[in-house]
Image (cartoon, rainbow, N blue to C red; front, side):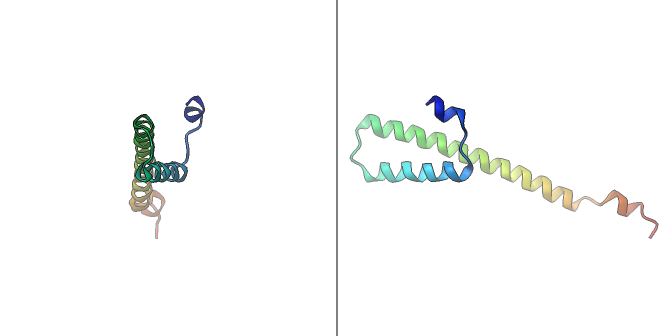
Length: 79
């Protein structure tokens, strides 16, 4: 677990890991404890993916806002 907290996976890595967790849970054959541990890991991975996506939304909104702002140099240009 210490290793898991030391390095945050990228969005793509977290999504792949989450997909694997879901596949394992759907396959069945696990003990109750294993299923609960996988479920908890899936919840953490889903939250991490949501954080990545929220960050991407914020960055995209900021980029779009910058694009829509009138350029100060253009407004003050004589022509």
